[in-house]
Image 1 (spheres, rainbow, N blue to C red):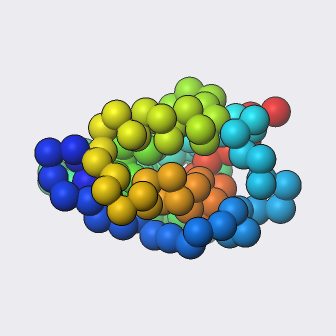
Image 2: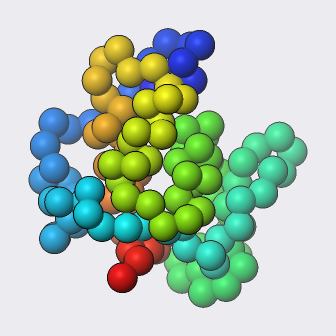
Image 3: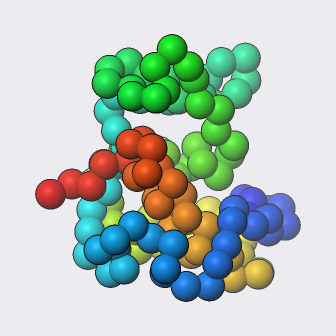
Length: 121
């Protein structure tokens, strides 16, 4: 999945919601936000997340983000539903293979798993 002016590239994929964490099957009603213990920085032209607080397993390291992950990270700076971010991503990226929605869900699943995103209660 790439910006609209480029061709589509898959983020990752499966066709079901089974990959989501328990109780996330209806993620459209749940709000998620980027963990404020990680700051997005540009280092030598590369987008990276830098831990600044309780970073857990990422202490003393940085996380490199591709363009799509940077876009999604920025989208979750305020509490948002997965569906809201999918709609925003559809405006920014082409999706001829129909993989955008699954890619966003995979991003949320992985970033929740590692504590990079948090669910807003």
